[in-house]
Structures are given as structure tokens and as C-alpha cells.
Image 1 (cartoon, rainbow, N blue to C red):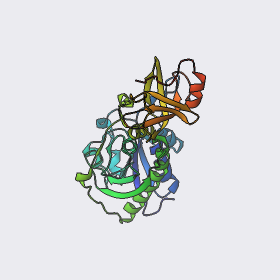
Image 2 (image 1 turned 90 degrees about the vertical axis):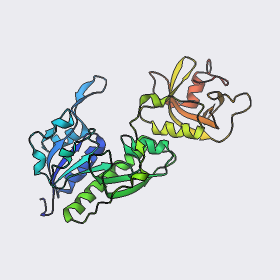
Image 3 (image 1 turned 120 degrees about the vertical axis):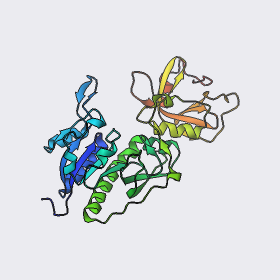
Image 4 (image 1 turned 45 degrees about the vertical axis):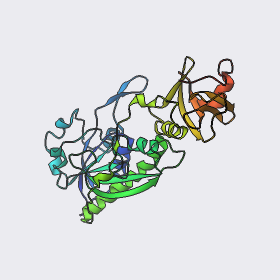
Length: 319
């Protein structure tokens, strides 16, 4: 039974993060979801069959109306948003025009995976890890026509651990984002929330990840490369070429120890130990601990070396 203070909510989202937010709101049983917007079904899996988004699957399980516009301009052609108190957005995957953001009675709010104004844009988790940030979090903001520029309604911090990958950090941020979204909705319903403008001088962009970024440049410092490996796990995954073989690097750690004499050229394989394969970089060494050959599953680097002693040897240079 929805209470007198419950809101009529339109929801826009696509991946599992968004489904977690929608599920949390539904489980509260205090608010009514009147409409769900999500991305069109996409090919997935080995068969590349059209597959509904996690949000669509959840919405259909609850008997909710689902719209899947191809473009922002095709969203809400029948004006259903005018019946909503608020539009809740979580990783929808489309930039929404101002006309859509203003259609619900109280406008639109967004669940963003950073502590805005730091890391505005498409890849806040990856960019935070890549930059060496020790803290990130969730921001619930009032949406405007800019890219993550709207005023802040609520924030909750979350530490970034030294071994966090984008996958592990997202796993912790997802339930936190769902909790923050519901908390913000409750405060909005009670009329107890205040919007705080962002300080634009502190803003930095979290540009979309380009697969070409994942190519390892061994001239970079080991600390920077280790962050890059964590940031790009599970996608697009850092890679290098050893001999004629393309290697994907799933896990690695920076070593402050300089490469030994005779192994100073960046990319040179310096040592093979049970802990991993040590590679010279522009500063320090990068210890590879989990790597993957084409068509194979990821494997511990030491096991890879033991299986390929016939051609992998110290002194080889990765490109």
C-alpha cells in the first residue's frame, strides 16, 4: 500500500546498476512506478540473440509498462511523464533533452557513480581508479541540460581499495547507489531535501573509454600501468604483444624496485617468480600476476611461464 507521501515515479535505466535501483524502490512499497524507459534490446551472448536489458526484465516481472525509444527525441511521445512526480534516472545511456527533464512535476534526478563535481561523464569508476583516487561515492543530483552539471541533492562516499578493479568497485557502489536513490526520494517526498550547486572549478571529465587506451605503453611508470590494468578490468582489458602473441593483462602490481642491469629497456621481461612476471617500465617494474592468451581463459602468470618455457624467457621485450 503506497502511503500518502509516496511519489509517482517514472524510471529510466538500462544495466544491472539501474535494475538494482529500480528493485530497491519497488521493494520499499512506498512509491508507485508508473513508467519505465530502457534501451532497446541488444544482441548478447555467443548466439548474439536480442536480449532485453536487466531493467526491462525486472520491469516485466512486476508488470510495469516499458518503453524503449531509439533516440532521446522519441522518448515519451504520449506525455506520460506529465503524470509523474519525478523522473528517476540511473545509467540510462542517453542524454535527455531539457524538455524531458522538466516534464515530471519535480523534474528529474540522476544516480551518478562519483562524488560530483569530480568525474562528470561516462566512465567515472574507471577514471577514478586510473587517477589513483582513494575515495569515490554516489551523487544524487537534480538533472539539467548539462552533462552531470546539476545541483547535488545527496552524496555518500565509498573508499577505493588498492586492489579494486572497475568490477569490484562497481559491485560495492551498486547497492550504495540504490540506497541513496531511495533515501533521496524519501526526502523529496517529505519536502526535506536541499539542492546545492556544484563548484564548476573542481569539475573534471570522465570521458568514455576507448578500446585503444588499453594498449600498454611500457615507457609509462609502473604505478600508472598498475592503475590502468585495474581500471580496465573487466573491459576493455589491457593488452600487450610478446613475440607474435597478443596477451591480455588482467591483474598486475607496481614494484618500486628498478629493473636489473641489462634489463632497463621498458617492456623487457626481467624475472619469473612464483609471484608473477616482472617487466621493466619507465619507472620501476610491473609484476604481471594474471594474464590471458588468445582463445584461452585467464591464467596465473607463473603458470603461463611454466607452460611456455620453450619460447618465453628473460630478456624478451613486450611491445
